[in-house]
Amino acid sequence: MAEPAADSLPQSESRHRVDWRTVVSFGAPGLGAGYMYLMLALYVMKFATDVLLIAPAIMGLIFSASRIWDAISDPVVGYLSDRTRSRFGRRRSWILASTVPIGAAFIMVFAPPQDLSGMGLVIWMAVAIIGFYSAMTVFFVPHLSLGAELSNSYHERSRLFGVRHGFYTFGSILSLISFYLLISAEQEGREAVRATAFDLALLASVAMVVLILGSVKFLKERPDYQGRVNENPFHAFRDVWRNPHARLLIVVTFIENVGSAAIGALTLYVAQYVVGAPLWAPVIILCYMLPSSLSVPMWIPLSRRFGKVRLWMFSMIMTGVSFGAMVALPFLEGTTFKIVYMCVAAVFAGLAAGCGGTLSPSIQGDVIDYDEMVTGERKEGSYFAAWNFVYKGATGVMLLLTGFVLQAAGFMPNQEQTMTVQVAIVTLYGMFPLVCYAIGAFLFRKFKLDEAEHAKIRGVLDSRNGSDLQEV
Image: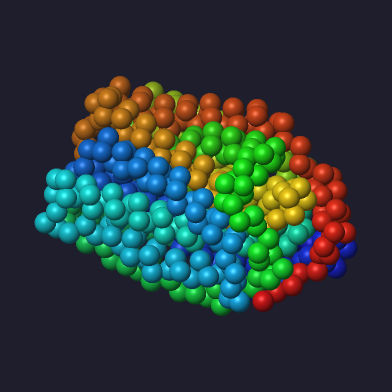
């Protein structure tokens, strides 16, 4: 579906139209980020339990420890990026600094030394995983913050974040090739998996560095936003919590991502231990990723017609129902039918994910405009740090729960699972997300910052300090 031409847009939107070079430069690093995050979300737990032979509960504790550290790192990076004064830009300075740590930590996750075992191996994986997520915080928080600054337009932000979501999802799709190679290597033995994982991690790390450098080179920033943050960091985060729109989004985001984290952690487990077709896992994930990426051009014009808030709420319900259907998998007959059933449900879930990935950060940018109207400050970093921490905190909670539930149910790696284990897996994978998304959609009904309210906010801000985009 084609986007409207710039000259056919309302004057207020056309004035804030972002050129395609900027849009692509902003979205491109999402390609590497999507690849890396999906590798960790969907494979590192299985890599640790089935290849490195680390107990699921221990891996759950490692992920939870990384989330506890995020309680410090996310707010610090967000606030410091808000406070950074540099001719090079307050966001791009941090994005550039993230390149080497991201690559090094990602390689470390998938390349533990061969002679490490026991507590030494556990410590290595803990340092690698915590290090990777910390490095990604240094990239993600300033990068998302910059996206909210590139345009003041209510719908143009959806275009920016929609393109970013497309790149991110395409990177996730590329990682499916890696999944297939790794799952195939499992048939040859654990050493083959280790070698394959190292080669893929090295290639991905180099590509991510190149994408970030290209993005930093072409993106510009607004110098008038520098220095517009309270010197007391506690005041900044107090303002985030006092913002009624942000507070509701924080609660909804946590509930929603507790559910989605189970999906990320357990897809390969479902494919292997419930469906009985591990080599089909990349195809099932592709059925989710392709609609998520290709549907972005559809959701942007639909958001103009039905509103970003209502459309995002609809996507939550659609996601919950799609994954809730997975509860039936252990009771279905025939591997082929199970595969088809999973693929159909994944398509609908992917369509909903395309909507949420496009509109949620755009709505978050609107909430930051409300904060500027109230406080006169621009602290995108503090806001996106809060949402990023909530996202990762929810993931940590779910991974901790997943590890203990699998162990309590009697999970044994690389073996046929009992019905008790299979039911435990699909309950976490299907029923739990359904409940979480339903609660999130119910609460989100109270969100009031729609297009009309945002127009009033922009009117106040534009009359107060002008709206012409200045760049460095």
